[in-house]
Amino acid sequence: MNGTGIFQKLAIRIRQEMEDVEYTVKRAASGMDKARQHQDDMYLDVVALNLHGFYSVIEKVFEKIASRIECSIPSGANWHKELLEQMAKELPGVRPAVISKKTREKLDEYRGFRHIVRNVYTYKFDPKRVERLAFDSPMLLEQLQNELLAFATFLENIPHEYKKG
Image (cartoon, rainbow, N blue to C red; front, side, top):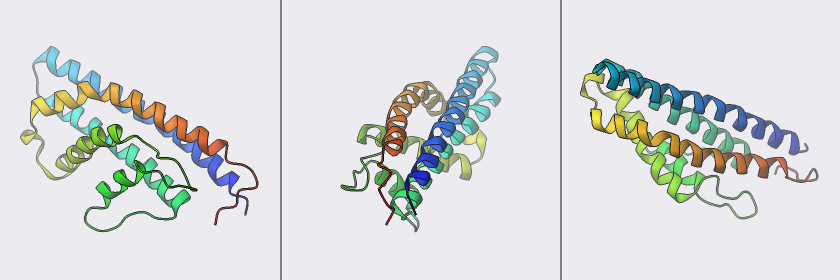
């Protein structure tokens, strides 16, 4: 089977998912503005949920890349961290690094925060951490967009004669 169709579809999916990620970052920023404006920490729950969504969408993209390009998604207790690390590594002859090490380091904090959102009561969130992550997310999003869209372009330029093996 010609692998180009698979890679084209993956590139399209990456571009579509980036739109969703952008929306979640905007919602987190809006929630943070409302939390400050109304002095109401209930808005931090909205921010936390959107930061959770931000990382979840990115991880979904990484899973698709790992399964469709490498045919290998990590498993076990630390699979989320291993997947993130996998995306920051070049696989010679297969693909370039999907994200930079700097981006991986920044995303790792969002990965850890997502774990907290899933497993801790919202009233136990650290408001300063939520605010910092919300503040940092637009810059991280820009970096991610540059890197993931460059990777999508890489996928679109894979020669037609390349066969997925």
